[in-house]
Amino acid sequence: MKRIQRSLVLLSIAITPLLVQAQEMKWNARFQTYIDQYRDLAIEQMLKYKIPASITLAQGIFESGAGNSQLTKRGNNHFGIKCHGWQGATVYFDDDASQECFRAYRDARESYEDHSRFLVRNKRYSSLFSLKQTDYKGWARGLKSCGYATNPNYANKLIGLIELYKLYDYDHAKGYDKFMATNAGHHQKDALLHPIHIYNKNYFLQARKGDTFKSIGKEIGISGKKIAKYNERDYDDKLQENEIIWLKKKQKRADKAYEGRRHRVKAGESMYSIAQYYGIRLKSLYKMNHLKPDYQLRIGDELRVR
Image 1 (cartoon, rainbow, N blue to C red):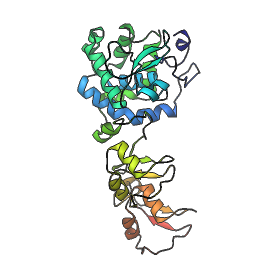
Image 2: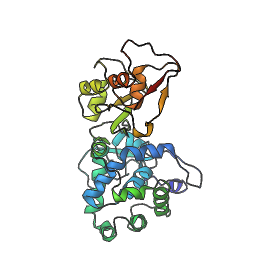
Image 3: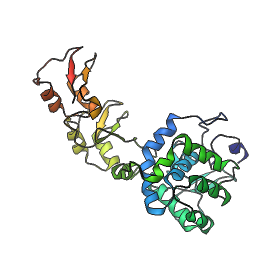
Image 4: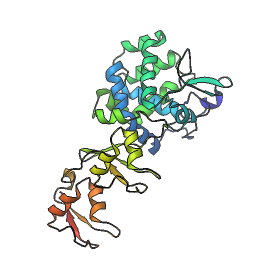
């Protein structure tokens, strides 16, 4: 564990990659992606078990390398919890000793749930639950003093993450979204889920190479045929990498931020790609601009989107 203690981020398994090597903690896009993906799941756990969402997220970032450790990829284990009498699936990695036993889960959701239960049911951590739910500093220091980690800087590292990314906001359940919590990491063998984003009162993800409406539907738990319909596409259409895929029926107008503004058409754009970008229905885009479906879009055209 000595070489891990010299790292910026304490990861409780030796196979975790070092994501930051500098002494100063700096904003990391990969960390933010992890937060966006799992914050609602952390809030859900907080509402259920009274563990600050900020603490859960900070530990998840630390222990899983923001979801990129081999333990997380192979075992969906986001918190580095070892077997300790565990009766479920397991994976083995070198840590304090050779080939130690770690818990393995079906998905991230199960890992988050087990992490909460691990703290709630273990008498070692009982004193933490007398702290206020918003006392993230007390929780961070308490986890260290109760023996969750061996790194002497563990508490400071958690606090640093919480303050840098303002994770303390989630301790007040700000912006909790049940749909996001349910789909943060449910029924997925691979830990690398598609991050889900919220925009224009809807949810979207970006397609990856090889994705289909069927595979996305299986991951999210929504019929692939419904997702195709929401995106005004045929179920068997091939998806392009980074293509925006909406997970609910699109709105009739763009977000309020575009009130009074127009979209200037650029090379390569189509009415459909513009509708997808703003999360609005293609039919509505034509209607707002008094255009017929056979209109030939030209570079420089200005379109109302709201």
